[in-house]
Image 1 (cartoon, rainbow, N blue to C red):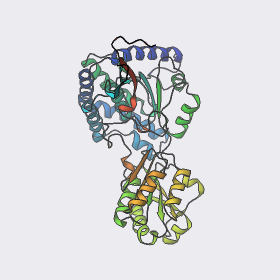
Image 2 (image 1 turned 180 degrees about the vertical axis):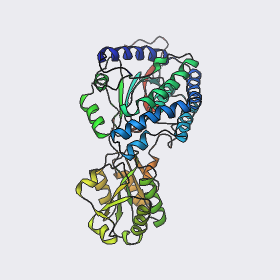
Image 3 (image 1 turned 90 degrees about the vertical axis):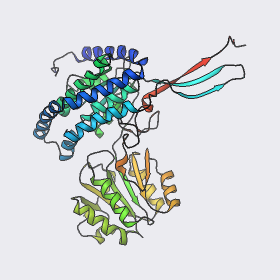
Image 4 (image 1 turned 30 degrees about the horizontal axis):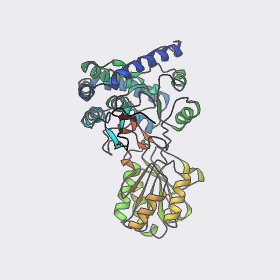
Length: 423
């Protein structure tokens, strides 16, 4: 780890220059070379699993000492399953079609010009993230396959884990004869490095923040580089009166409790008043049995005395914990209005067998991901068949929803003529 007394601007310039040079080489790298690097990195992660867990133990001990919440410690934890998941994720990325060089569209002009719109890498991507060391593999792998160099700045709480993962990623690059600078990590926990990244427009083409509200807000406020915004995930499940009761229960419990610490976890359940007497008791029983605290409006508390009174702040809260808010609504219109007012345009779902109600909700909510009869926990690039993701973009420019390979490319126009001159 670089000491805080290091000349941070000089360090970041050095990293940026190396990334730009690596990006130029990656721009024309073959698909075979990129795939070999990914598969060799996966093999290295498996071979060095013990080293990864030892590094993670240091971070977990530090996190406990800092008083991190159970949800944040869960994000930080690397066990055998998660290490294998990282390796499989890299192999999945290697198995995906290379987007670089693919034709998005082509057409001919009356003057004989043939025009093609072709995918190209963005260049250098900076990723700033917290707590989740697996992002080091996911983000580095996706950037590599899409032909982009990456500069990774993980949170201080995951420094040792991320550094160990980076070593495996760079093992893969060496085996494929690609520059190690294709994937770099900022070697300091000094927060001044984040400020430098946000202004490095000469060497970074886009910044992707992946973390809590304060981190994302800082990036949005200070960045002089284009940003793929990733706001918090205040996700909703709306149980329509046309829902199957058992399906509604299962989707709500999974959406909330499968992993409470991820951005796709359900934070608010909306339910039609007409459905509440029949549907809600079994949903509440299942949530309480799973160890979830439920905060609800007055109508919901009348159905179950275990429900804690909800405040207005609860409708706007991303808990990332075993807590959920429940509110009864008059129908699809009120559900849509609540989601669009209190949500974060991340992921929202409706449970119903009424096709018209489903279409109205899916069309009406201003969400990056809108689901019908499925858990919000499917808000994940891997589940979308993307191999992995850098994050869920909630903005509307360039990338929205899971940021995978295609979202990490731009395009150029290739025009072929036969001697045409413009009159």
